[in-house]
Structure formats: structure tokens, C-alpha cells
Amino acid sequence: MEKMIHKKVAERKSRMSYRNFNVSVYCPVGNINQIEDFEAFDEKLRHLYSNVKLGHAYLECYRGTEWITKEQLLKVKAFFESKGIATSGGITTCDGEKQDGFASLCYSDEKGQDTLRRAVALNAEVFDEFIFDDFYFLNCRCAKCVKEKGTRSWSEFRLAQKKYITEEIVMKTAKEINPDINVIIKYPQWYEDYNETGYDLIMEPAQFDTIYTGTETRNPTYSQQHLPKYISYFIMRYLESAAPGRNLGGWFDPYECSYNITSYLEQGYLTLLGKAKEVTLFCMDSLIKDPAFLSFAPALGQMFAEMDDWLSQLGRPIGVAAYRPGNARGENNVHNYLGMCGIPFEPYIEYPEGEKVIFLSEGAAWDEDIVKKMQDSMLEGAEVIVTSGFVRKLGDAFKEFVNVSYSARKALVNEYAISRDKGVCVTGRYMGDKNVLIPQMDYCTNDIWELAAAYGTDNNFPVLLRCSYGEGSLGILTIPDNMGELYHYPAQVWGTVRELFCKEMPAILEGPSKIQTFVYDNGMVVIRSDLNYYETVSLQLKDGYTKATELLYGNDLPVVGGKISMQLTPGVNYYLKLER
Image (cartoon, rainbow, N blue to C red; front, side):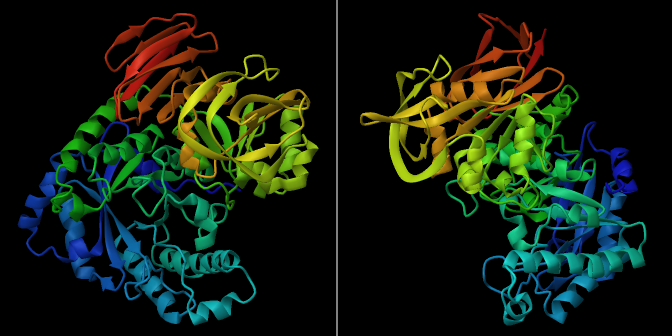
């Protein structure tokens, strides 16, 4: 049964600091413990609230080994509320004594359980709502955890332990003290690894009152985390699927973004394009004291004002139906690499029955009933597109559809061809800008057809395969070993791929990779370039659309042969209104 939407959600909608969303700031316990002179603190905080319409603050009571007293917490709470800024509590359940990356509390130890219980109790005594920062994960491998795990996998052990501590410590403690409290779990952005660290997108949305979404990104090359920028949008939509109407907002930070302020703002743009109703800025002291980030608040103010105007014009997000079960793994972030290549996605945590185009990556093969679900969709006329990783994961079961398999052979390629006659012939010679290492997919000629191929020496290898099945069709997209090398497929290959994926979309991008598209059900399309240079692209209009207006500069775009063209400036959102 779907969990009832907490009354706090309705209350939030009545107190948005902007017309279309609220802005909050997260205040770690170390920040607010330092506040002694509130007038002096106000001088610092003014740098944020004079630039950003700040409507809410999360005040943390515990992080690592540091606690705040109830007396100090009440003083800080009163200060923010005197400024018209609503407050909630916060907890970061990390172990500050361990020196092994980020370390969670150990809940096999009574000390860890007592710490959690004490932090929850303090929040419930002071606030009607509190949030867990995304350290509410489990990664302890101490002797006690090893013994308690037994023969179970770490994933099985952690999911079971997390279920117990959430039910018996967090929710029981909080509700006994304050029956109407809203308890929020904030999920990190690394959704591909949730179940390995105790996060459960099936169980936890039913346990907690509401959820929150981490939409942070970093430079995907020079960072420990591998995060294509599109994830800030995709995960916002994915977690909305996991808890419809109870995903309160998106949360991002400035870290590893000082090399380019646009990379920081992009987190906010994509979070709001994903229809977040609140944005949380982490964290207070970084934005008001750290010289590396002092220029960020004025830029945020401009970005929020801009987005508040545009969001009124954007309908409900739509895209290619991407199915990813809650506790799946495989092809880490493939949706986001493809999203960076101009394919708009609408993710589903449950299989999207009735959709006309369905995308399945390796994670979808974790669904034990996936073969039957695919059959039903294609027998009813759907286009089902899978990745090479999905074929590998499904193994012999995939041969129900067609005799295609993932071989052990690789090919290093940089020249490509496409088909203009549904696979009878592949033509042209299109150069990629770098070599790409791809798996060689074994297939049977004349039983399935190459729509795009990579040339080898007296040979070629499929990039996109397609065959009919029932009333529908099955497509197979080859994913390089390094997914970032998807960006090196030339524009002509991407044109063929997008034509298959986006056949039900109102417009299809024609151009290179690193251009994102966001589509809405009222004919609005947003285009954003992550290239380092100006680029001219085209959009093929579909579904009877005959007119396009670029709203940012107020230009009517000529429609020639069913297409429009426009020049993109890096880092700028272009808003298109399509009309029939």
C-alpha cells in the first residue's frame, strides 16, 4: 500500500520562498556550535540570504563525535525563525573516530545504537521534522559485524540491519516523543550502490515519512565519484518514482566545483528541471565563509530567479521509459552517460507497462520476470531497447528473443557506418574523435539487422542492432567498456540511436554528444550544451509539430524540412516551445 503523504508536505507548499520552489540551507553541528555572537553571525549569514530567498534551514545536532546541546540548538532555532526562516533538525550518522574514507556508525555495537537513539531523541524533542544526511549508510566491517553477518552477503546483512535500526530505533524513538514528526531520509546520488551499503529503495520509502534526493555532481574525470552531470536530473526523477509525491527536494554542494562555477550551478538547474519542490544548499559555512565559494551565493541568486520564471512554463517531465528495479546493479550510471548524449529519460522503479518505448540496462535483468514483461510489451507493439550489458547479464535467457550474445572479444574502433534502409546495407564512413573499445556482439546475419556499425579491418561490429518481435521491436545498443567513450561516437551514429530511442518524443536532437535534452508534456523542450565550444544543432520535429519558438531570446525558429536549427552556447539553458 502506498504510504500516505505526510501533512508536512502540504505545509511546505504553503511556504515556498520562491513561487515554484523553496530554498533551504543545511547547517552542520560544527557550524552552529561556533555561534556565540548572533549579531556577528548575522553579518556572515547575510551574504547568503541577501542573495538567495532563504526559506528553510536544517540544524544538525550530531556529526561524528560532535554534539550540540539542547540549549544551543534552541537558541539557533530561535534566531533563524526570527528571520522568517523555518527550521528542521538534522543528523549525520558518521563515525568520526575511524580513519577509512567515510565511516558509518557500527550498529552491531550497542554504542552505535545508543548514539543513533540519542540523536533521534534530541531532534524529536526540538523539531517537528528532521532529516538524515546521506551518511545513514552502513560500511562497517569490524569483528562484530563480520560475526553477525555470518554466511550472508554484505548486502543482505546490511539491508536487514538497516531495516531493524530504522524500525526499532529511529521511527519508534521519534514517534514516541513526537507522534506527528516527519522523518526524512536523504539518499545519496550513488544509486547504483545503494543495496551494498544498506540503502533500500523498496523498503525504506515505506518506513520513512518522506525522502530527499542527493543531486550532487563532481568533475567526472578528476573525482573519486564518477558522476555524469545528467545524474542531477535523472536521480531526481528516479526517486520521485520510488516515493511519488513524497520526494521533498534535491540537495547539492559546491565541493570540487571551484574549477568552474557553471559546474556548480548546473546541479541546481538540473535539480529544478527535474521538478524539485525544494533545493537544499550544503553547507552553510562553506557558502558564507570559505573564500573558494564566496562568489557562489550571488550566482545562485541569479540562477534561482531565472528558474523560478521558467518553471511556471514547464509541464510534467516525460522521456524514454527507463526501468531500473530498486535494488539492482550493473552498468554504473549508463542512463546518465546516455542522458549526456541527448536522450531524455523518465525513470521507473517498477516496470513501465503500457509504454511505447522502454529502455533496459543491465540492472533491469535483475528482475526475475523481465523476460515475460518484455514479451508482453513487444507483443503489444512496444519498442524495447536493451544494452549489451543487459544481454550479458541475461545470458541464454536472452535467446528467447533473438540469437545474440556478448562475446569475450573486443574491438578498438574509430570509424562508423549507419543504415538508411533498416539494416539491409550500412553506408558512409564517419570518424569518431578518439578510439573506442567495444565488446563484439555475436549475432546471426539476416535474423537481426545493424542500424549502426563500427568498421574494423575487413570487418565491422554492431553498435545498434534491431529486429522485430511480435507487434513490436527489440533494439540492442553496444556500450563501450569505458562508458565515457560513448561521447566519441560521431553525430551520425547518435542520430541513428536517438531516432530509435526518441521516436515517441516531440523532437529529436541531431548533433554530437554532451548535449542534454529535457522534455515536458506541454510541448516544452529544454536544451543544454556541456561542450566547451559553440555548436549548431538541429531538432527534428515530430508528432505534428510545425512551429518552434526559442523563448530565451524570443526567436521564432524557421522550420525547414521538419527541422529547426540553433546555435548553442555552453552552459546556457535554451527553452523551446513547440506548437502544432
